[in-house]
Image (tube, rainbow, N blue to C red):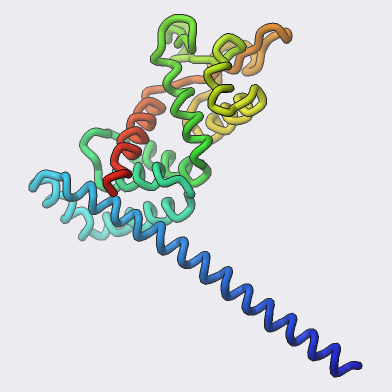
Length: 228
């Protein structure tokens, strides 16, 4: 009986080792695929550079500083499941001339992309666009009253978000998560983030120039993906 028990335990142990090997191999394959995709994205952007831009980028890649930065960027893309985020990071690494991000903004962006998924990024794109609209939907309030532009999603324009699959609870959750990731800023108004008496509610947030730059970067990344 003891021999049978030992034999069974050995079989279980062998099976466990086999599963661990498969899980580890799957993880390595996925990380390798993401890294290769990132280099493919970089190559795509490189092909569209001018000769002078290519020469400058070659010098940057060959420098010690450029190689250190490359490691940081690759670490970032390995931690995000969102293809648009990976393409956007590749554009920043290539120092795309359309986007003027400083080092602080780049670090913040890469950090935020590590915690984002496609659904949350879609929500960000819609929320950040509200500040550019005029009229009844997503009105951006004057910076004369606040330190940065303020927008809000409320019971009047929520249908736009509901139609995309985000109910009221998801609107509050996603907005607060984007604020935590520093893609949006906290509501600069004195009123609470969530207000209303039941018949009317809103969630306010700040949309800065950096938010708009990030949205533009994501749009360009999205436009380039089909060609990759």
